[in-house]
Image 1 (tube, helix red, strand yellow):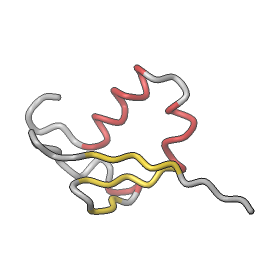
Image 2: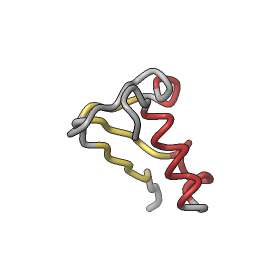
Image 3: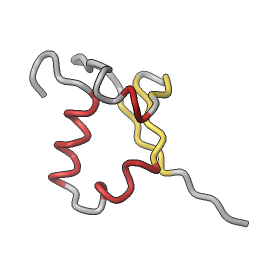
Image 4: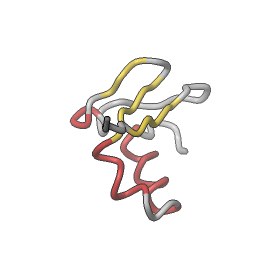
Length: 62
């Protein structure tokens, strides 16, 4: 990723690489360095070298 890239930029790049991801991204919990990021913040959060980005798929059922 280029310097100044946002979390949204990273997710878009991943969506272009992993086709199924584009259908799941809105249902995922996104963490950067252990901190949750809301869907509306994705384009505002700048990622830096060394940041840890986690994508967690929320699964429900019983």
